[in-house]
Image (cartoon, rainbow over all chains, first blue to last red):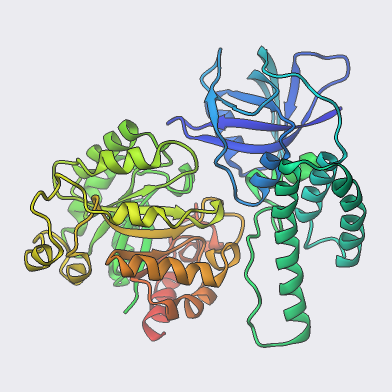
Length: 224
Length: 259
C-alpha cells in the first residue's frame, strides 16, 4: 500500500528538506519502505548522500498543502537514532536507512529499512476535511493537465466534506490551495479572453511541474 | 542601469563571462544545490585569474540558518578575496540569530542575502538586514557613513551602499526549486516590485534571479533592479548544470543593455 507521509532528508550541512511523498510499503512488511523521488530532486540527492531519512506520519494537512504552496518552514526537532530531523507536529515517525537503490531515469526506487520508530501522539480518527485537502493538493499539482471544468467539479465535491468537518488547520490548508487555483483560473481567463499580457502571476509550485523535485514527488506520491 | 550577473563554476567559465563584459561574476556549483558552493581553492584561482577586472560574488552553499555554521562558511569564503558573499536564507533555522552573528564579522565584507521567491519569504527580514548593527560602527550616523564610504567597495556601487547596515549590502530574490519555472512564474509581479522597492528604500544593492530566461528581461528591467542573475539561460540547452555557452551569454548581455 501507499501511505501519504512527510519525508525529511538533509544535506551534508544539515539543511533539512521537507517533502510530502507517497511511500510504498510492501504487503506484510513492517520495516520496509520504498521511497520514489524524482530525478533530479533534493530528496534524491540528500538520500543518496546521507543514506538516511525520516518518514513522518502527520495529520496536520497544513504541512502537505504548505509544501505544495511554498510554505516549507515547519518546526523540526532532531531525530533520535540517525542524523536527521523530525517534524514537530508528527503523530509518529520512522527513522530509515537506505539499503538498496534500483536506478531509473525519472524515479529511482530507494529501498529503506526502519531503524527506529517513535510515537508522539495518538491517532484520533479519520477526518473528511483532511481527505479533502489531500485530494485538492493532488488537483493543484495537475492544474495544467486536467480540464478546468473537471477540477472545479471535483473541488465542489471536496468542499462538501471540508465545510462539514474542517477545523482551523484544514481551513487554512484549504485556503492556500484555493488561492493557487483561483490565480490559475484568473491567469487562464486572461489568456483566453485578451492579449493584454497582464495575466496574474501565481505561485506555481506543484502546479506545472512534471519534474518538480519536492512537490513533484509529493504530487505523484499523493496520487498514486 | 541594470547589470548582468553570470554564475560560473570554473576558471574557464569565469574568463568566458569576463570576455562577455558581464557586470558581476558569480561563483557557485549548480550541481550541489540552489546555491551550491564552489570549493574555496577553485574560488581563489578564479579571483587570481580575474585579477580585479570584474566584481566577483560567491555563494557559501545550501546551509541551514544556524549562526555558527553560516559564520564559519562566510569566514572561509572571505579569505578567498571575493567582493561579495551570497548567503541563502533557507526556510527554518534561526534567521535573526544568523543576521546578528554576521553583523559581528570583524572585517569589512559585502554580504548579499538571498531570499527564495518560491518559499513565501517574509520581506520584513529586509528591515533586519538593513538595520544598523550596534558595535559595528559605534559612531554610526547615516550622514557620516555617506561622507566616508569604505574604499574597498567596487566604485560602481559605492553610492548606494554608503549607508552601512547589519553587514548586508544587498539582497536578492532567487528560486530554490530550479525546475519550477522562472522568478516571474513563481512570484506575482506586485511582490517582485515591492521587493525591489523595499531594497532600494534601504539603499541596498538589489538583484533578481531564479531560472531567468531571455523573455524575463523585458519584464523585470522596469523594476530597475541593480542586476539580473543568470545561469541556466547561459548554458547549452538551458541546463544549469551544463557548460556555459558563449553565444548565450552575449545574447543575454545584449538584451539587458538594450532594455
